[in-house]
Image 1: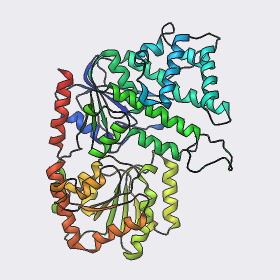
Image 2: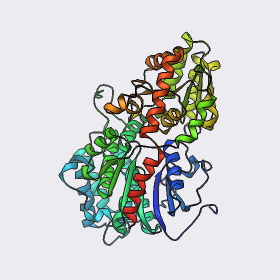
Image 3: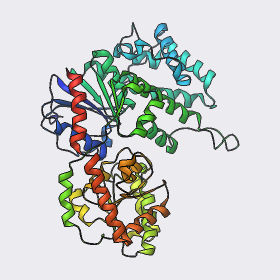
Image 4: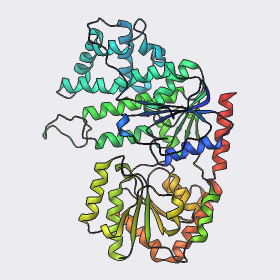
Amino acid sequence: MDRFPKSDNVDIMLLLEGTFPYVSGGVSSWVNQIILAFPEYRFGALFIGSSRSDYGEFKYDLPPNLVHLECHYLHDELAMPAIRPMAGNSGAFETVRRIHELFLRPDEGTLDRALKTPDFYLDSNNGANFEQFLYSKKSWELICDLYQERCTDPSFVDYFWTVRNMHTPIWLLAAIAKRLIPARVYHTVSTGYAGFLGALLHHNSGRPLILSEHGIYTKERRIDIFSSDWIQDNRNALQKDPTEVSYYRDLWIRFFETIGRFCYGAASNIVSLYEGAREREIGDGAPRERTMVVPNGINIARFAKLRERRPDNPPPVLTLVGRVVPIKDIKTFIRALRLAANSLPGVQGWIIGPEDENPEYAAECRDLAESLHIASNLSFMGFRNPMEIFPDTGVMILSSVSEGVPLVILEAFAAGIPVVATDVGACRQLIMGHGQEDEAIGAAGGVVSINNPHDLAGEALRLLKDPDHWKRASNAAISRVERYYTEQQMFDSYRQLYQRGID
């Protein structure tokens, strides 16, 4: 597109999977925040999405120091070569066989050097290019062998197409890595496909790779995979054990775990948002000595001025800021609102976030509100500037099943708004504190288990009905965010990482 800025080289190339600039939300806001924070650096951004039709217009104005942007779509761009018979590269497919051994025994070795370079996937003489993967005899033999050795599902057809669909994006990513403009530092904001691309770029160029994980990618993909209805499970009712994961779900999980370890192995710095996430990364294969914690930070002053606009007593408004998608568990928020309205009939629930990412789920949420006769208390308000809705919010709600360090909690704290959130990611640490000094500040709201509308409503009502309790939580929120979560603290940490990589 003509509006995409282009350059011959950049200082820092951001690798972004399904986030900025097309998708709003915490990670995208963080990306925008980071680019603007370092005007002395020339940034590039490479967006990886599913299909072009899944995304609309930009959700962000491009910062002036973002001098290069390109977008790639895994389901659209890889042209299928003409079908023709071929033998295939024996050595290359033996290398591929060894990576499948790592699927089962990830602690017994590392990826072959050949698999770390784009040329392996592009050079038919020294590797296995896309045409060989699709049509060669060696590829067919490998798939058949793996099916016979390992697959517990009776359908070879489903196995064949699962392997095809799982691995096809790898060849597109290799081609992208080969032709991408040079950068002095690569910075991926997840593992997954963006992280795999980052590892290829690092090994191909020798330049450092920084990984920042806002949520643990493999954990979030596990949630998606467990809830997906497109993954086959051909066991009949008598064969299914509810304690066992279907073979294809397990295969997808192990695939993402494997490419996650590839990214961990290539990254010079692996940044997590809180200590619990760091320990999870180490458990998933990240070298401990390369891991570090850099919490999110925000511009406190921007939100602090909103405190003056608040009424004396907390407004009876429960606000959820987030995309209307299953991982945010909007349905639990709606059920909690129904329970809260039983005790406080005038309570309002505001859902602030786009509905276009998953229209089917959004429709289900609206239907649920109608069925619970709570539609008059609930407003789907779409994207709104937090500066507009924070002064009229009594309690911020997060009902998510997965989070990192949610920016919306920090923003609410800076505005003096208590938060009730599920016990995911760093939410407990943010609300209750972490360590003796932090915990002494006091609770800035409440923490409940996931998918628990009863407790979510109870904690919210406790704050709304008791102004003194609400005020104590508000003061704790302000103290905690001002002491531990300023954007300057975050910027100082990333400035050191960028300087170290660029020098």
